[in-house]
Image 1 (spheres, helix red, strand yellow):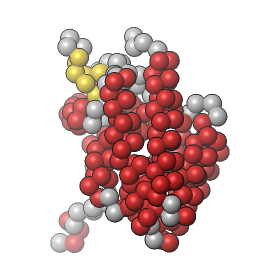
Image 2 (cartoon, rainbow, N blue to C red):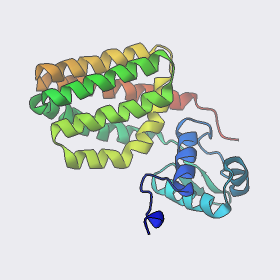
Image 3 (cartoon, rainbow, N blue to C red):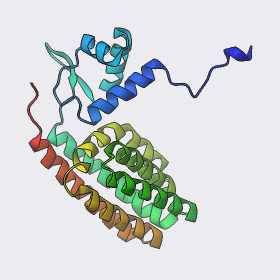
Image 4 (cartoon, rainbow, N blue to C red):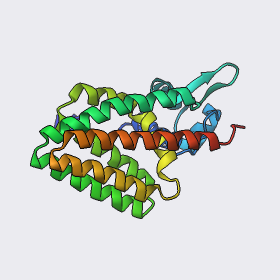
Length: 225
C-alpha cells in the first residue's frame, strides 16, 4: 500500500492559493481598502470559489483581510495607530532578543546570521525585494533561536505577515538598501563581539528608523477606489 502514502512535502491547492494571495497583498498588488471579489479572484487564481473563501477567511485571521459592511472582504487598511503598536512590540521583543543573542550566541549561530546577511545584501543589490523579505524573516528566526527566546519568537511569528507587509513598504524606498544593510551589520557586529548593550541599542535604532519610514509610506499611499 506504499502508493497511498501521503507526500508530506506536497502543498495543497489551498496552501498554494493562500501563499499567492498573501504575497499579492503583502507586495501591494492589492491596495489597502481594495475589494476582494470572489468571482474575480477565482478567475485570476484559477481556483474554485470554495478555495477562495477558505483562503480569505484565513487571511482575515492574519489581519490582511477585513470585512467591510456592504462591501464584503477587502484588503485590511493600515491604521497608523496599529502600525505604531506593531513596531512598539517589535522594538521590545527584538531588542531584548538581540541582547540575549549577543550574550548566548554560539559560533554556529553567528555563522548562520552572517550567511543570511550576505543573502539579504545580494537580494538588495538585485532589487529582489521578495527575497529580502524571505531572508530577513530567516535572520530574525535565527536571532531569536540564538537568544533562546522561544516564546518571544512564537509571538513574533504571529505578527510576521503584518510585519512583512510593512517591510514591503519600507525596503523599496530610495537608498533603503544601503541604509538597512548598515543598520543590520551594526547589529550583527555587536552580536559577534558579544556586546549585549550594543546589540540592544542597534536593534532599537533600527526599529525606530523603520517605524518612521513605515509611517511616511502610509501617508503617501493612494486612497482606495
